[in-house]
Image (cartoon, rainbow over all chains, first blue to last red; front, side, top):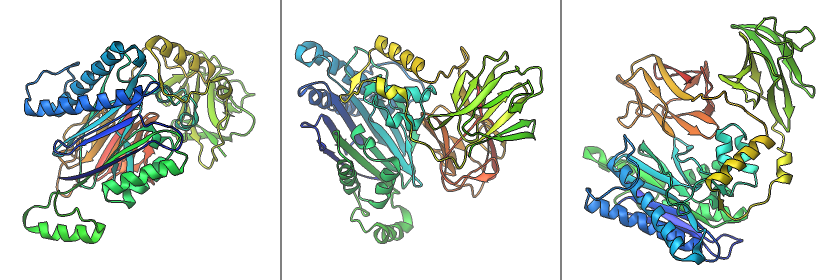
Length: 279
Length: 241
């Protein structure tokens, strides 16, 4: 599968500093996004530290697959899924330690959302309320569960999804990175199909832009970088009350065999983008 | 306007609209929906609109009120839900209702929180409890764990039963699919089931699934007992406990 990706982040229209952080590690096909919290500039410290830790741990894991794994052993995960789980546990430790060592950073933390692609296998690791969506056959499907109070109330049947969207308790998280010595991490693995589009985003997007608008933008704009910028712009046009960060990843079938030239031709006429040929 | 249809087995007994007045359900003859069965209490349950949503409330009945398969004290109803009282069930038809803007007392009492914050375990427990006490008290019967399952009724698949554990379950011939279809000319990705906070939604893939005899217009929430047909297989969505 051919993978192309793009990302964008913006401080928004209200806040003065951007506590979001993202990283596209393209040789690994690893995508990491964090939304920091905590007063002063500490949210930025937390999100940057979390992202850096995950990327480093995954690179180490690739070079040395036998490197020690942290966290609980979840059965049925692929090696990439296990590595991602371990990386998020490590990031939690690092952020927590940093807050302990620097009293002024007390209370800092972050959401952390990661996606790692291995062939047609996608592993998603996640803590907090940033989200991963998969756009397939025009339908936007959320691959993560928000670890927020309102989402938990919906799952328990105390609120409807619409009520949750209108609640003013949306910022209350039940789980975040770096606020406790241990954290529970969700890992989800799904198979990918050609044509799938993956979206990682901070809550600055999902609170401002509706799911149908997101799906429409991803469908209308086949170049990931431009789609990411368009989504950030949409969030800001709708008010931009929070930092907004978006990563878009698209999958195209690998041209192979005797009909590859046919496919390449089709791509050009269909999307008109310059990426159809190679990486 | 929302409509309630009292059914016994598959026979329609009575149909009533839900208006501004609550619909009373019970055994005594002064109810709007009279259910003549000893398992049903005189004043068993009520259905009414509250803040734009359809709500069922158990009136302290002896044998309980169930929505789909869950015993409830109070619950929000959705289109297609079934309320069970004794051996009768009441089908909920909420189509054509314009959803009213939701307003509740919770808004005025809850503090406005702009900054993201995290609840530690104790505060979290208190807050969830408080929210439960303030709002609608949906009570799950103690100790029940719900296991959403797809049972294959007919057609060739790699297993007869699948427990839905993932956020996204794909149905198709592909090696990447969770529910693998067997046979020639089966689509790689026929359909997909997405777990959202409020339930499981089936959406189309290369095919449009037929749920309870109707081709779905878009992602559709699956209710316990729904029958799904696509690509020559018949699947039954059930929630085990």
